[in-house]
Image (cartoon, rainbow, N blue to C red; front, side, top):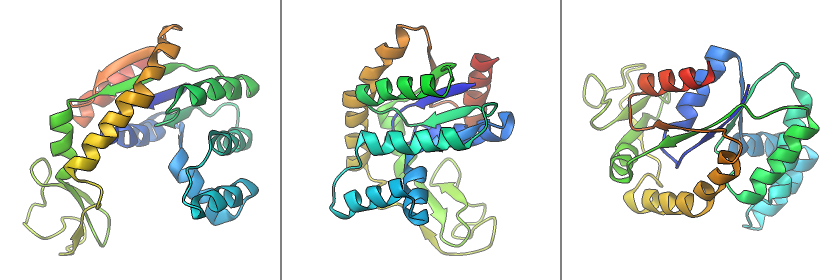
Length: 214
């Protein structure tokens, strides 16, 4: 299976992708992770990407496509792929079509995780992690059992992402609606798109995705 997970930041794409990796043995391709790995490994594409980022510019579609091409080349044909948050634009969607054809792969399903913007703001602005072990928490949905103490390692140090604030979240939502959501018709024309309620519990979202892939 080769699937695309779409949805604004905070919709739960990463969580569901991780579960799919464990459950189906698929490979998650996150462009951000691939960029960081390529830069660290100083691959030719990584060095090119680093030069772009050092200038303060956005990495081009061509560089992202080259990263994905390299990953697909390196992995076996029998390994399914999850594209996490990619493609983000119409141009990337068309380039992905060409890449999949080049590697003799077909897209199985495009799953969009739908969200309520106000609820998403609350979800994101309330999340924090243990500074020691990285355990995930939320102010209301998943606080530590003992206030101020990590359930996993007992640390009393926590941190929040500086961009987990209401203004940033709403800007991300606006960008998603403006750039990424418009690519859905590209896949709807091929009857590949399914929508899942991303505001449901993690287990309910997982079951809904499993049903789509069955």
